[in-house]
Length: 144
Image (cartoon, rainbow, N blue to C red):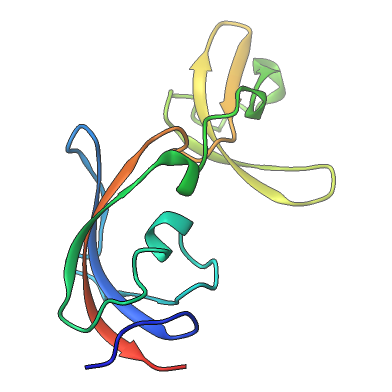
């Protein structure tokens, strides 16, 4: 039975949980996640766990935040004047919005705090600062 190696295309079923046990993502009910091993298409800590696995293999993978979405960066939070946000945009904490950088790049942000005068937007990935856990099963390998 062939084992996955860098450059191979693999398909995995997975369930991702936080240390609290809360599920943040799963392939259940969807097609397996397909990616090229070692290509940087998925977080590095999960990618590094795949080489050597064969179809049917299962494992639990603990991924520290440094090998997932990194630490939460306080500089990625920015308070903007509330009047600078159009009235039709919902401003509940947790709402995900998109901003545009001066260079035209689209940047996803989350409403982190709302006061009478300001809205704090957070451009960190929602899982930044979190250690992640994955239950994975390799369901397909296409050799490079």
